Length: 253
Image 1: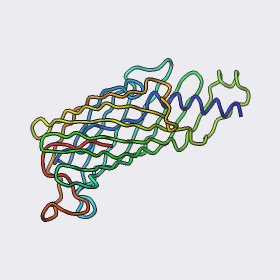
Image 2: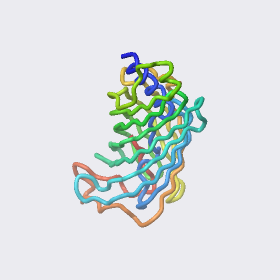
Image 3: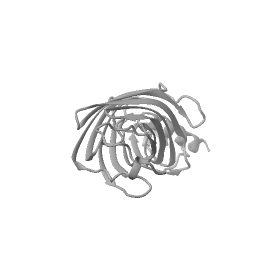
Image 4: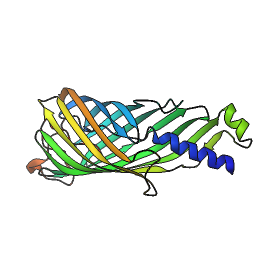
C-alpha cells in the first residue's frame, strides 16, 4: 500500500506541472485552418502550440472544430522533463443573437520523467464556455474539468532502493482539475486574434493544486484558408447554430 500511495502522490504532483489548458481562440474565425500560440501560467509556466481544422456541418451544429495541441513547460521543475499532447473537438452548441454556449471535449496524454519515476497518463478534458460573441471580439466565462483516467508509472532504481515494494504498472485514476476562467478576444483584420484568459484552478476536491492555483494566459491565433462556415438556417434560428459570420473567434471551454 505504501508503494501505491507513493506512486499516486508523485503522479499528481507531476501532472500539476503540465495541467491542461486550451487555446483561447478555440474557433478559428471563418477560415478552415488556424494555428494558436498561448503563453501563460497554468499551475506552472507553459507554452502551448496548436493547429485547428474546421469541418462544416448542416445538422446539430453549423461547424465542428478539430484540434491538436502540444503543451511544454516554459521552465523545467527540478529534473522533470514533460509534455502534454491533446486531440480535441469543439462546437458552438447554442446561439441567440450575440449570446452563445460552446462545448469542448479533449483527450490529453501527459508524460513526465525525473529521478524518482517516469509516468504516462491519459485523461478527459471537458468544458463549457458561455458569453457574448460579436463581430470583432468576445467575452465568455469558461468552466472546465480534467479527469485523469489512468496512469502508468515506472519507478527508477533510486526509488526501488528506497521503497522495496514499489512496482511498475497502471494505477487507478489519480485526481483531476476544475477550472473557472474569464476569457476575451479581439480580432485584428480577418485572420489574427489576440486572446486573454484569467481564472482559478482547484483539484477535484475543490482544494488548490500543489503549485499556485491561479491561471493567466495570453494567446495569438492566425486563421487561413477558404471559408468553412455552413449556411445559416433561415432567420438565424434553430436549436443549434453557429455564430454569425465574422472574423471574431469565440473561446474554448
